[in-house]
Amino acid sequence: MTTFIALLRGINVGKANRVPMAELRALLSRLGYAGVATLLNSGNAVFQAPGGTPVAHAEAIARALAGQMQVEVPVIVVTAQELASIVAACPLGAGTADPSRLLVAFAQNARALVTLEALRSLLVPPERREIGPQAADLYCAGGILEGRAGKALLGRAGQAVTTRNWATVCKLQALAIVST
Image 1: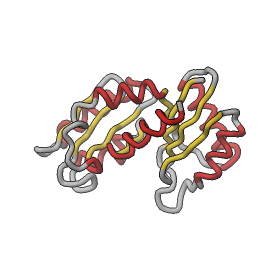
Image 2 (image 1 turned 60 degrees about the vertical axis):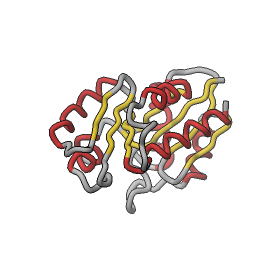
Image 3 (image 1 turned 135 degrees about the horizontal axis):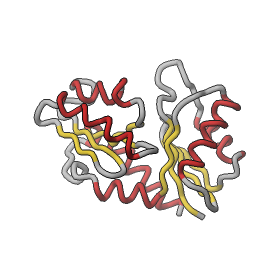
Image 4 (image 1 turned 90 degrees about the horizontal axis):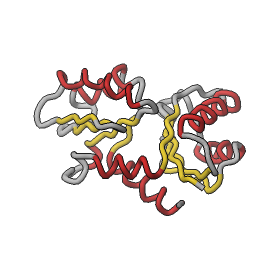
């Protein structure tokens, strides 16, 4: 069995796209996934499947959310191994004093990360942005919603990605390890 992590974009923010985590776990179980666990209330799930690709799982979950819960949101799925690689490769993660100020942007298609190049012009030092092969990192020294780059990443510029702060990424990695 392979362990996967599903990241839903834009749920449980305000009144739109409400997805209770108990219902998300039930939906994933109905899809045949095992060992389903959720983290926080923001659309993070860890599950196991005997095969399939992250893209196929993302598409199946998105279809089920739309069909069964009338919630249409992007879903990004990575394997536990991919998540471990993203964590290990994050140049900003190890030295982050405040993990809530470091965002990791995940994309189902790595080509979508190239669109985040536009954030460079919005950075104000000591903010930093790094784009890797599987994820992009943005450190917002003054707070995520205080800088133009953070606002852009969470808004229109980040439509093709979903973000999690560093603390959540590390918790997801720990949950994935336990689930393996």
